[in-house]
Length: 357
Image (cartoon, rainbow, N blue to C red; front, side, top):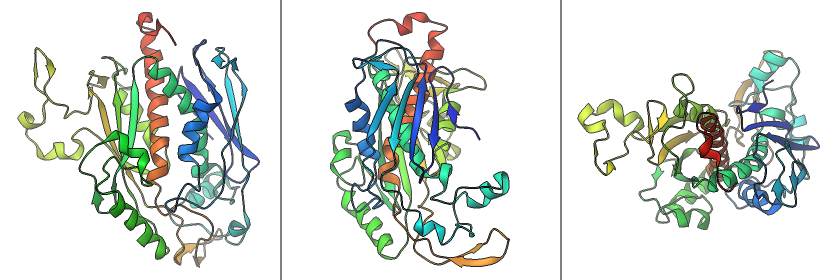
């Protein structure tokens, strides 16, 4: 089972949703970079469960422990190991349905591939694993900030409610983490309505990456957009991804879709900051379609592990909409990808790595 991501800036996660804990080992972090427990905890607090009515009621503080790789709040260059203990795991609801495949989950495929699966919240397939990514992503974000690269994500759609503006200062001021305060209440109402019906809703999360130097990425098969796509699709809830104009490009003429240039640079950013698989210096803009949470409190037809038709209703504590908590996960995976691409670029141009880290 693959549990590692990245080439030079590389992470390996471990642990299960209802096990003793989860964790991550981060390798390839340059030495001498300032990083504190507070830097990592700040990002984990944004992802942790139980934040509001928009999220699962599972009460996990997600307190991170740094086991290695730092000394006096600086990286040593050695692998950084971090542990997050599970404090509020309750497997009782899953024990009742362990012989059934939950619709929309990895139960069916894990059962057929591995024969033995952890039915407690999905084990490794659980979204709880993303806390490890966020912890590692906090280190990547810190590294990138020292290079003048910044990443912001926000909810831009929940069900049929779409954001019309992008005000980054507003993202953390509402429970749905949208950059458009004018639609925050309407988005929240869609979530509450679905929750009252024992259902869930999906949406769109947009991510913007600022400050990338020209040339990150490795054509032809490790294009930057391909690397980012792999990172985003590794998040279990992501079902679609576009850059810049995305699918709108299919209905545009070349004259409408191209980014013209003059002596000042690019006159538009319809490509979303990536040309020929390389960053072009413009903000990288991508949108992820987030599916509705698969665990819902409504009866659904399914199949048992023996292959018989059955019916189940998923009990327990689940997010009625995953978009708000997906925002820091998207940022983390984007940061890990860009940090890796940056270090790969440094193997060709060592000057990129010079300066304070």
